Length: 239
Figure 1 (cartoon, rainbow, N blue to C red):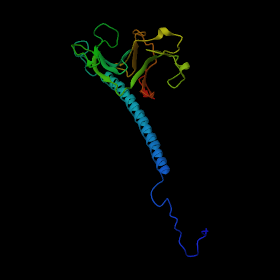
Figure 2 (cartoon, helix red, strand yellow; figure 1 turned 120 degrees about the vertical axis):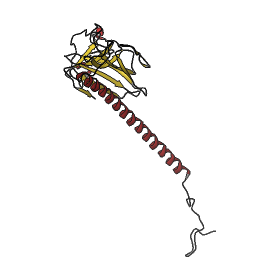
Figure 3 (cartoon, rainbow, N blue to C red; figure 1 turned 90 degrees about the vertical axis):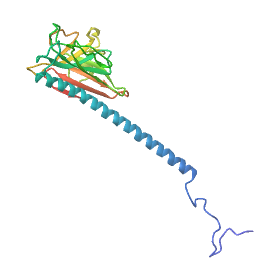
């Protein structure tokens, strides 16, 4: 009967099965962990990139408003209305159905119409012509969009207030929702000398000062949100 014990000084002849490399199970676990980590990194990078792009988009819109304010107050010459003049109002125009663009315009108010955008543009840009009020068309890319735009009534609770405390007239989802007649078709935010104040116009406002502010809500394909606000007293901010 063979002995189960080793004689002193005798070497074992049993070799280890782990003498080299990884076991198959360990290799599979390592590959799986690498895949999970890589997926998390890619998702995080994509999310952060989307947030940065949305913030940049909001700042670009705010800077366009600031440029309109600067042009309006600094009396930049305009050919709106058919002849060069120095009494133009500059602003941004937002229209229902145009979720991926907005217009920078100059209104000379020589056509007898209310102080608002009366220019012509399409998806390719401004339709040029003598007296055209359209200066440039800004296009929003990467599937981002203008979710909605609103004129803010004096009773509004503030940009950071819950929806039930807001009083907005928007191109969709106006608040309070019990007032469906408050849906607007367009929003114009203008600036004209001598004051840096914002003039806010919609199809419901006529020529009066109905609104205390204007808000433009921006959204990404994954639901990342930003809000650009222009207050009637001239302040411009984003959230």
